[in-house]
Image (cartoon, rainbow, N blue to C red):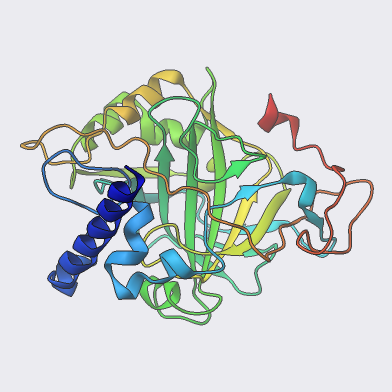
Length: 328
């Protein structure tokens, strides 16, 4: 029985790779998914991303892939990590278009409204390109990053590109020091985050029920999205979608933001398909955690005894207890 199963797996891998070679590069770039489709055609899920396209090899062979499971006992305190600086060019309000991309809820800011971050682990100013939501089909899952093995109902990612070195996001995404992603865990509460409440209230979220739907939002204050903390965790990683370029500096904020249970339910009613196709919930749009390997995870959260070695060299005793806002 084991021999038959091994032969089946070998044949399946051969079929996938052979089929992938027959697909044009133009179609190939968007030929991926987070979960198995039920429409009769194969679309590669995360475990196959690195096998179906030679341009996506990093998804399978990369050494600095994201997301990761953050073990707080292995974090390194870095006293030189300053707080992040948010710059809106003197304009507190911004506008943007919210999309159902079929894979994410995506908010792309109006190009006329500049939103930049600097400081922290960043040596350059980075411009906001997109705000992206990942969420689960149930409250016990949904975030891409894990904290001591624990998942959260959702995760919001603010994706920025290095505007000092590169002309646009496309160029920066495949270049060194190209991208900075601020990640904020989302939890359930009766008092939602002001910014997310604008995105997820009934009048807004129902405008993007199906793939390719879009809706314009105005009068947003990006500062409202950030939790009330200057503390964060940071590491060098990758984009969490193909081609999985290893050009991202990740910054995980040390407090969550909140949405209501009804807003989470509304997210789960979004379809990853067009209205004339079978309904498939967009939920569980996450890539599994990737091996940390030889990377250090740094933080500006001071704990009593600071280890000098990276976790791969010497296991640190559990000295840091993650912010109680995240654990409770």
